[in-house]
Length: 317
Image 1: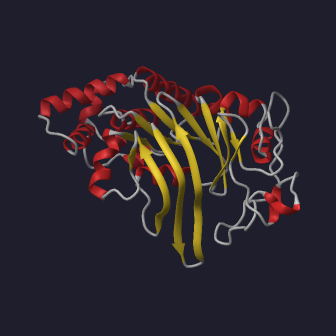
Image 2 (image 1 turned 135 degrees about the vertical axis):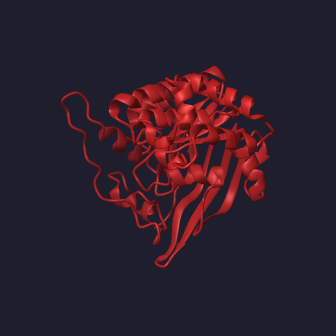
Image 3 (image 1 turned 30 degrees about the vertical axis):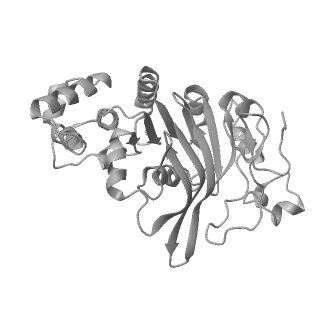
């Protein structure tokens, strides 16, 4: 479904160039849910927005390839990307209220999405909107359609955003921490809903999250990012059971288990303006070698389904 190769995105600032995404490569297969994890600032959200063509100035994609069902997206005119977003790629962000226009009714916002892609009567658009809201188990559908974003709870607003993202049945959904702004009691409902929608249509999804428990429960594969690079990727079960990169191991050790508190990660991520010449994790790594400080590791296959970027991996299967 999605093939990303060498994706590079930079931001020009007064302090210098921020190297936000640095040669990221990964695949998402048909019907596959892939989790993207890492600390804040690791490049997860910028990677997703780069795929969608939503990186704004002063940022820009400076290299790499993104292919959706075989079609190259990097370099497409803005009009072509707008046609693909919604029809071929849906997007659910962190804050539903930031995604909804406060001055338009919910029904108008559904109608605008439909009109951006095809001709439809008001009646047909309203019927399709009601159908999609029903699919996300929205209570009081007609009241919601006639109302406005400020009249919705956080969970209801996110259901509207998900319905808008799935309105034209895109085969790929990109979700950037879709439960961050929601109450804990609502988060599981939204995640269960997303999984059901993906399974029902054999759709694919990239799920950005900080929560490794969410990845373990809902995802087939995982991509671990650090300082704008993919340091490890593979099936969730094997990566979490036998992490290969020291950073993956540190993330897993930071998760509390029962009455045992998690171990804090030592040190801090590198400066993305003065990007290190060697491994970006070298300053925090307990397995660091001299070559790690001067030479950047490249992704190396452990098995047919696993890759790690490390000179001294924790496991080689």
